[in-house]
Length: 388
Image (cartoon, rainbow, N blue to C red; front, side):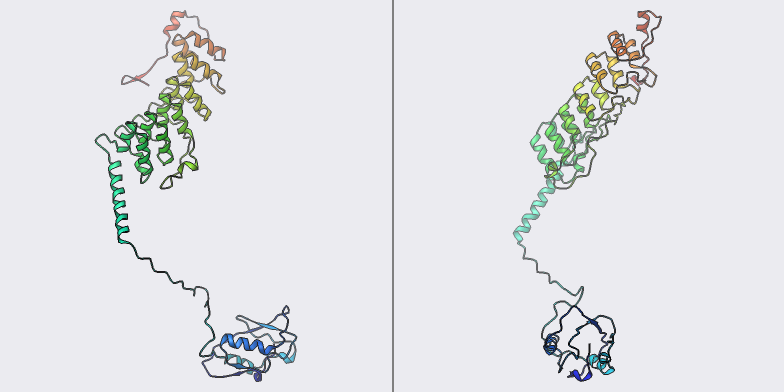
């Protein structure tokens, strides 16, 4: 880049500032035919009062200026920049009246003006305030507990008012109010299961109600469904929540593992399969096993499995179902080392003993008479009159 001191004339004097310019060769550019036009346009855009006769002495090369760099001298003597050129470049001044304003002065310089808020309607504000007050009053009246600990939601479910109950659930401010317990430890979900209102029970689940709360006996809603033989309710309680079911919720709900842990015991030490078998609900037991419940689970008090329950009760249909189940342990031991066939023999269920032996149960013949063997019943330990 060849610039001589005679090529630039500057009008006006202002305080000078350091200007670091680098001459970089641009081999990919085509030389301008009229270099004076280039400086004229530059002068108009930057407001510089600069006159020139020619811009470059070498029309075959075009250079560009870099940032924070020094002058790079050309290899030829004609391209060596003199001290006078530096002095002239440092004395470049801006015109008092620039041709245009810069759109952007650098990063962070853009300032967006905030449009003023539209004027508010006093009537609309008043109506909104009244709506808020009405909603707060609704929440307070609905979820306040009476002398038995029941809320209005509890009562609506007890009185089988399904639609009003679902409306209350839809407008619940949070999931905590759906888990309020009465004096019996029952939540709204417990009551929906007891009254067999499947739609209400499912809506409680999708609204974020806890699926496994315990009542005063340690029973979860699934325990109650299994005990009462409500396979439809049990199916809902075991079904994971779908995304389409929570679209109507006001607030997002927390994640819950569904199906829940099927080895959970109540305060009597019974899992869901024990409760179902105790009441003879084979269809509920089948549902639990299809959801991977443990068929050989032992209860917490005596260590009995569901096969022990069936053998001791003499329920032939239940026994046939259990014998046909894959993975059943016909020789499972209780805490007192009693097998199902031993319990059946002690209760005098000879048909049960025969079926268990055919299924592979170990059985030792004794020299006792049948009458003596009938007297050999298993010992039931009791605490405060209750079997343990």
